[in-house]
Image (cartoon, rainbow, N blue to C red; front, side):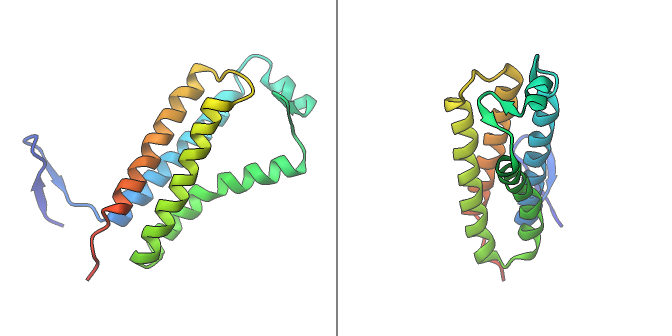
Length: 144
C-alpha cells in the first residue's frame, strides 16, 4: 500500500474498496446490535417482550424469523464483500444497502410509536454508513 496526502496535511493509507465496504457493513452491524441492546433499557420494553407484543407487533415465530433474517444480512455482506467478484459485489452492495436505507428510514418515519432519541441517533448513523456503502460501490474502480 502506498501513502497519499488526504488534502488535510495528513497521510492516509489507500485501503481497498472491499475492505472499506466490509468495514462499513461491520459498523452497521454493531449499530444494529447496540440499538437492540439499548432498547432493553426503555421503560416497559422488557414487559412488552414478556407479553409478546412490541408496540403492537406480535412477537411470534414469524417475527423472530424475519428479524433474524434482517440481522443476518450485515455479517453475510461482510463475507460476500470480501469473496465475490467485483462486478457482482458492486451490484449486491448497492441493492442490499439501498434496501436497508429504505428499511431504516421507514422505521424512523413510520414507526407505530415515537422512537426514542437513542434510536434516532443510531438510525442516522446506520443510514449514513449504508449511504457510504452505496457511494463506494458506485465508484468501485475497475479491477485489473
